[in-house]
Length: 250
Image (cartoon, rainbow, N blue to C red; front, side, top):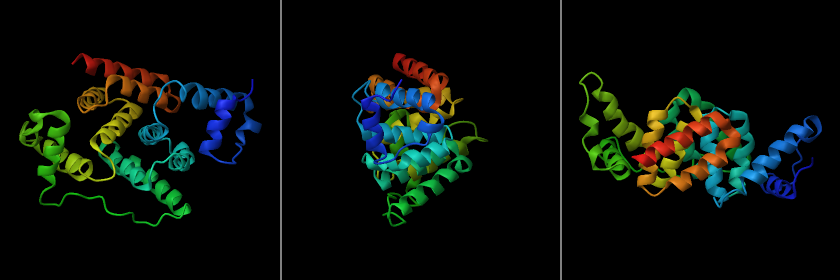
């Protein structure tokens, strides 16, 4: 078996002039993987390359694939993902994975951008202040999930109500309100964070429904799952598909 022409061409677009050492050490494996990931999968649907790589970067953060993230980040930039968009993906991941799991990806991102001559820090994307972040975050929740979220920040038992407040002012007020990505892109990467890390099926169903509500329909989400499958495997991909189907029934 040999690499298909489609796989070779896609690999060249990702990494111009680069020849993988795996072709010498693991030729049978790399031929099967590249033919699958860079031919069969990428040519399965009409998802554009930029969206594909945004989803893959979010998925790699979600599954803690730091080595592959370092490899594919330059490819994502080659396919048109901007430095600001990459940073926004990394920043938003903190709300869904925590700084303990995201910190290595922030370091990798800074290293790769610096290597490519990008001056840091990037232009500010903050749109809220300490004074208005809760109100803006609540509005973002309402825009994405519906009017039922208007008073969510002050709902629930008194002893845990602060967490609902933090969801409004921190998760949504600090991150979703930022520039660089729109709501549809932010909900897509959130879907990827949740699907890739596993164990978050209730939240994944909720965010699958939110994606559909703002225009990322079921067909689109299946495309996202399909394109990310080589990076997280079948079990988590099938779980994500089940969650999409459950959300569609709602």
